[in-house]
Length: 184
Image (tube, rainbow, N blue to C red; front, side, top):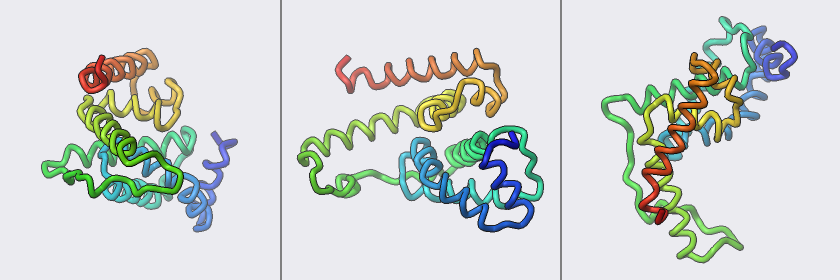
């Protein structure tokens, strides 16, 4: 693991190099926000959750031991932060409206296509949010984080075969819950 340049940055941060933490933050900020967004479906909440994940890493620096790739450790922390958030008794859920559609950039599709795309994305986010926690974590780590089955297994403490089963069942559940919407 010591050949991982991100591990080297984290070790440098542990030794007192603040710039190393900023480099890690800059490198992974967008990925972690996107990962958290897949969990909660709200950009502002995702940004807060990503911030919480990085804060935990910052505070954990004195205890850091490189047992896995840094990226694996980071996304495990992000997954735990997200799971803690959605398990809260009062989950910060906002109502979505047409006012919250992404702003139109030049050259983008017509408004009706944008609306259809936004609705499809909303349906997928809701379907992902309804998955059991372990399936959601495994599926998002695989699709969003692009982790291998072995890396996911290490992160969630399960066998590779169990991870494959979780991802397969998660995909089936998504297909089933989106079937009526997709006209299948």
